[in-house]
Image 1 (tube, rainbow, N blue to C red):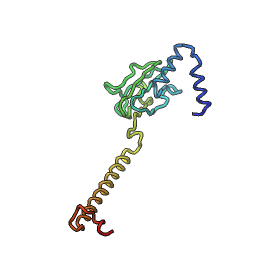
Image 2: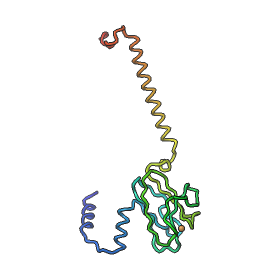
Image 3: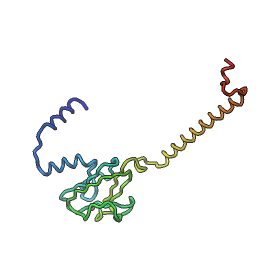
Image 4: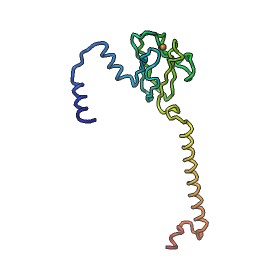
Length: 181
Ligand SMILES: [Cu+2]
């Protein structure tokens, strides 16, 4: 942060804020919500369809006086268009909604707007899931490859030490190289 930015932030903090309900709500949302999902300008989509957060963070679905009523309903899969029984649910569709949910575990969370399930879908990626990494096989593959290399290196070292023992004169307490220097 440069000096100008720091001063700007300090000035902003020092300026007394006029209390009004909407301003308080907005401020509350900006501090509590790691991501805010609203309705797209066409009124039939979620603005920011895929959001990425970390575990422990909150996603807020907020819209006000929309033309049509919408809601948020968890689905079991990306292609699913029906609400998951017992899943995360904002309630009946409404033209004004403020629904907040805190995700505690790494996961990819899929949801729909029930009345418009065929077109209104979204996802929340919590933490480093396969979805975020893209090819889920590449990383575990690399990991096991490096494990194999480590084992091979360890096995080679053990064999090398064994061969030193075999070539020693019998007194294993004395390293072989001592005699030749
Ligand atoms: Cu909708």
